Image (cartoon, rainbow, N blue to C red; front, top):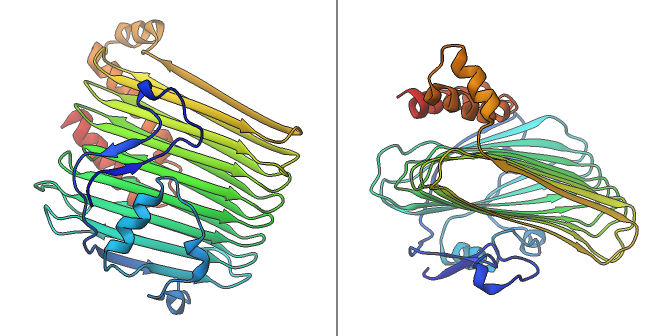
Length: 355
């Protein structure tokens, strides 16, 4: 598929800024991915190839072109249904593909009432490649009182491209959480849309990224508040080095009928070089009176006083910068909840900062 347009801003801004959406430069095909699965005992019968109708209605953060790409491929979805009342379920997906080829993996989670599942996804299978794209589309239907947690670690090579698309529907008291570490790939496009339709439903997104050399990140995260007393939290923390670039769109959308709802969007970016490009567009849309939305950003260089302190203790300036940058990623890595994934992240960071 050529000329894909993704990550559409819900309410357009001045077009000359080139932030309303993004174009995927290279042609993308929906090839087959090779997946290693590891499931909690008892969930095996929940895996099915056919697609439930409820998933078609769930909108995603990257937009309709990702749906078109999925339909153009032949890869059956990994679909898991968590029975009502079943807790502490785990699904681990290790995604691989042939070197130089593209792959598309759809994942669909149906969480029945009062159920819980954590999904771990790691893209660490290909080290040396001649390019290609790895695409993931994750959809979750979170019913009353259910909880879905998605944990992702992306450590692809600098020649690869990643498309990461998420769409979630939450019923009454339903909750969706995602923790994402984007550390590799030459180009990353990521979007997430959570429809908080049920009363008291909530979402939380924690995004960490490390940009080096000419890496680029393009994000679009939306929390759509439809039900009463809903809650959203979005936090992005990253480091940009060399000539890396990042565009983050964070939208909190209070629809009519979402009285008593609240949302927060925060971003913390550390700029390590003069050549980096950092763009952020926080957006709060409001069609309801009794709501509360906040956004804040901390964007800047390494604090001179902190740098002076570290250098005065015997560190070189370069060592001090690397230590502070790594600490940001380590903070999220410690929250992954999977020892094997954490070790992979630590190994990757060792190669980046000390290799």
